[in-house]
Image 1 (tube, rainbow, N blue to C red):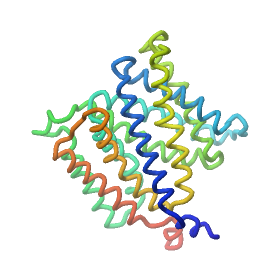
Image 2: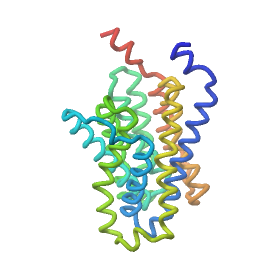
Image 3: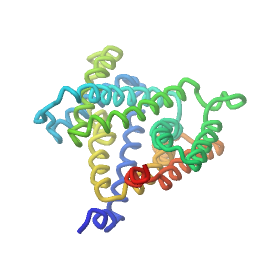
Amino acid sequence: MSADTKKSAFPLLPIGLLLLAMTSIQSGASLAKTLFPVIGAPGVTGLRLLLATIILFVIFKPWRLKFRRSSLVPLLAYGLSLGTMNYLFYLSLERIPLGIAVALEFTGPLAVAMFSSRRPIDFLWIALVIVGLLFLLPIGDNIESIDTLGAIYALGAGVCWGLYIIFGQRAGAGYGAATVAIGSFISAMIFFPIGLMQTGVEVMFDPSILPIALAVAILSTAFPYTLEMIALTRLPARTFGTLMSLEPCMGAFLGIVFLNEHLTMTQWLALLCIVCASIGSTSTAVPKSKIEKVS
């Protein structure tokens, strides 16, 4: 059985796993937000990264790898972008609804996907993103509809997500899935001390907080990453990317369910523009092999 046949067979299972992974990630974000009043976004970031690193080390055992000097810079950049992405995203969640934060953050990987091509149709998707951002961002008469600093944090997280993809591809070339554990370790070494300094040892390691923080680490990292890896090996890349485009709407829906964060019709329209741009960009993408043949 060929790889293509394997990826096309029984698609409902990997699609279900991917939807479950997205639900897990956004549920973890909703749960993390409930800890903000206790230890703040920096504390949640640091504790999540520390616990996630421990879990990922147990799963992937990265100490068995032989590191090359040429891979150190991409690994460091990958870990730094991973940690900063989480830090800025949680800072944005302190100020704006989950669905809006996810949508603004999603512009990072969307930009990476779109600007890698120069075809006319890609400008349509860029225009849709711009329309979505005009509806979503606090501009002009819309200035009071969303916290400005929260939007800036979310967009900054999006930039880091784009860098995470770029450096993750370079860093993961020689280490595979274990790259996630290495990157998580690097980010934890940077952002756990920051969270600890801002929160304090007693509050950070309060026994009543640790179970929730562990659940956040599992829901946001270990469980969804494993499911995504299984789905990615069984779905075409285009299908995978298209389904991932639903994540902003998933975040908005779970924000309503768990956090009682209701969006306006204008904000839903903005989400729709960004999701349509992402689906369109993914579904019309030219496979790498075809690009190489043309060139």
